[in-house]
Length: 110
Image (cartoon, rainbow, N blue to C red):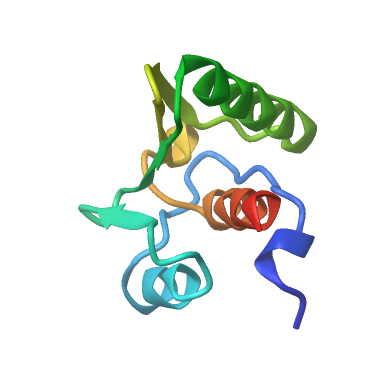
C-alpha cells in the first residue's frame, strides 16, 4: 500500500460524508504525532521558527504545495509561528485529501 504522501489530493464530491470513527484514527496514525484532531472535524498543527522571515518562507512553501495539489489549508502566520488547519470546506469535515496533504507536509519537513 502506498504511503499517504505518495498519493494525490483528490477532490471529493459535494454530499460525500466526512471521515469518521476508525477511518479518522487509521489516517491520523499515519501522520506525525504533532498533528491534532480537533472535534473530529479538522487537523491542526503549529510550527515554530526563529523569526518572521523563516515563518514566511515556510508559509510560501505550504502555499506552493497547496497550489500543486489543489488542496488549500487555512494558514495563520505570525512572528515565528505558523498554524495550519486542514479540513475540506466542501463537506465541512475531513476527507482523505486532508490527510494526504498533512503527510506531504510531514515529508517536506523530514
